[in-house]
Image (cartoon, rainbow, N blue to C red; front, side):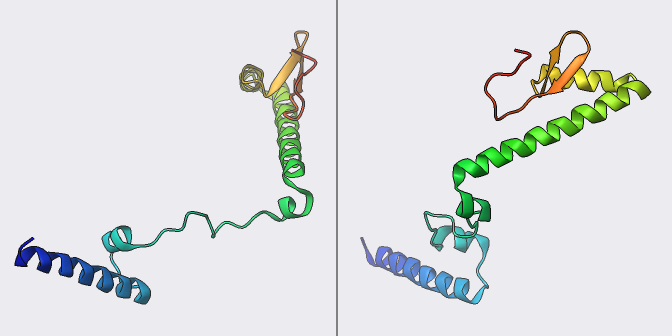
Amino acid sequence: MGIFGAAKKGFGMLGKIRAKRRMLTGKSTRSERLKFGERSRDIKSVPVSPRVKKEGVAASVARTKSDAYLKNIDEVNKHTRAITEAGEAKKKLQHMVDTKRAYKIGKKSIHPRDPGKKRQIGE
């Protein structure tokens, strides 16, 4: 490593120091933040939800599935009401059956699917 190699290495260190100083003052460029910035392994900006803190993960998952079930109920009811008004809702209701968000019993009876249960009546 000649004289110029040592100078280059030293300049790189100065670049790092300058970049750190700019980051602290909030005047750094994106490339400096990517090259010299420190990244933490864990995520600190997203807190644990209050429901998970209070009831636990299993209860939070069950509540989320219950919310999805209520949403499916509302959508089936909306499309069922719309069937009397227009034929377009029949396609949407059939799409819900095809994507397994609802299930059929017989030819006309369509019911919302509960994601919290493994087996449904219509399967």
